[in-house]
Image (cartoon, rainbow, N blue to C red):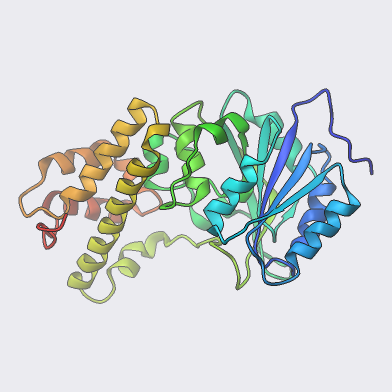
Length: 331
C-alpha cells in the first residue's frame, strides 16, 4: 500500500516509545502501517534497549524513509520520559500514542480522528490479549472497571481513566503539558491536562488488542468488584488502616510533586483542585476530627471513590473524618 498521508485531512503522528521490545515490535509497526487513515509519520524513541529493538527500528526507517523516524536516547529516560521525548519530535496536528507490543485494528486512527471533535484528547476501549494474541477479555473498560463517563479534572485526579495506548491527543496539548511530571504516568498527566482544557472524548468500541505479558511496563489490572473491601482490608482492621495510610501518603507526595514540577501548566481552577486534594490527603495525618476533609470527600464522592465499590467508598468517607494521625509531625 502507499504510505503518503491524506493531505486533505488532519495530519496524525504516531509516537512510539520502545525499550527492549524486539519480540512484538515488528507486529505493532506492521499494524500501524496498515491503518486505513495513513499517518504523517511514525516517530519511535528507543530508551537504550539492550536487545535488537534499535536494529528493528532502523530497518523500518530504511524501508519506509518518508514515514518512519527513530531516535535513540543517550541515557535511559524511563517510560514517561521516553514518551515525552517521542511526542516532542512529532509534527502532526494530532499525536496517537503507541506501545511497542500491541496490535492496532486497521481503523483505529480513523475512528479517533472522527471522534475527537474539539476536545484535547480522545481514547477508546481495547481488547485484552495474552502474549500469543489469544483473547483474555473483550473490554478493557469492563475488565478494569474504568469510569470513563466521568471525565472531569477531579475524576481523573482520583482515578486515571485513560490508558495511553488507546489515546490520541492534540499536539497543542503536548506542548501545554510540558514538562511531564515524573511522579505519575504520562497518560494520566495528559488526561489531567485535557480535563483541565478542552476535555476528553471516548470511543466505546475496542480499537486495538492490548497485549499482556511478563514485560509490560504497567499493563491492565482487573477490578476488585464486590469483593473490594475484603481484599483491601486483609485480615485485620489495623492492617487495613496501615495500607490506607501508606496509600494516602503516596497520593499526597505525588500531588505535591505534580504541583512543584508541572503545576504551572494547569489553569487556576485546575491548580486549585490539585491543591485542595493535596490538602485532603495531607489532613489524613492529623489527629483532630477533619470536617473539612470529610466535606471535600462527600462533595466529590463519585470521583474520589473512583473504581472502588460504594461500600469501600463509604469506608473511605468515614476515614476522611477520623483518619489515623500517626504521621502528624511529618506531614
